Image (tube, rainbow, N blue to C red; front, side):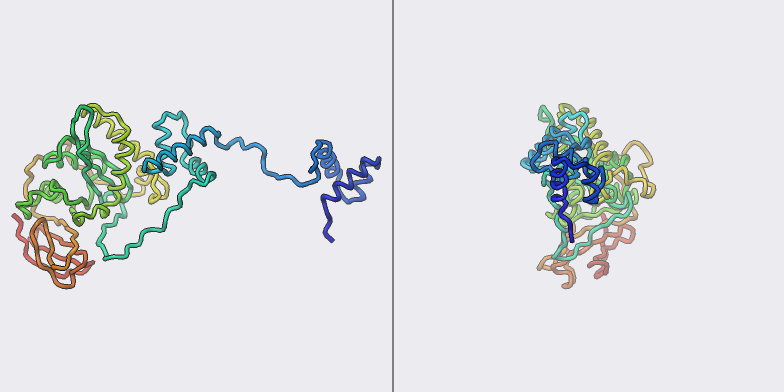
Length: 388
């Protein structure tokens, strides 16, 4: 029969108060000496519930974060949420550093604070596309794919206009931030060259359809400065579909981070200060920003497991106009609509009916002067394409 332990404790103390010796009490009840004196001590504390069990949880937690720091973390999180900015543990850590907190809690500590206060927004399931299959690039190693994008125009104090060429390595999430006061042909060459000197030369360079990337719309087969720069250095250029910026999702998300943590927060009153602060932001991101896609590691922490990078062979960038490449390939991803025409830099080509309402990859082979059309991995057409 199961014994009532609380009843045994009350009986033991009642017998003791009646004058019975302690040894006789604990012996007859089949308990130890330590047991008797423990409950006698509890009785003498004067609490009405002295005979009940108490939690074994420590009364003090010396390693728990100070309450003031915890409230600061929660306040920062709330403000970031209201402002529509990133509000995860990583973003909160950066914000605390910017606020001048001497020793901000670690990202893991911030995560525990958020979880303890039920302020964690669970990530939704990975997006599964339900539309047409898109021929997206994948990157297994550093230098496989760079996504690049111009942000701007932006303005310094004194109405000085500038643009920022932001690039992200897909495999490591390392970034390069290159500010410039214009985005013409030579400025673009300078920007990519400077970025490659820090990130390395990629095998594939993915961009959108800005005119500075495409070249002159009057000469769609003339190969713009970016195409020429890339092909001359063994890089294949990929143009995403027009009006579909989410195909450059990694650099687009980075742009949001750059706008909030750099453009809106850093005081820049001169071009020299702009360049200095841009490099500081780039270095800080690559050293300290942690990505879930990298298993919680920083971009620089993942670099060691990748193969060796290739860098520009000289310090100064090439000078525009660049010579016409004699080999290499560049690609355009385009969605074919009901009219059955493929638009390549303004030129239109009728494609087979199987390509209607599908994403096509148009690959221009400079060496053979041929245009190859791919639906998925299947080549569906090949035709001459004379470059000028």
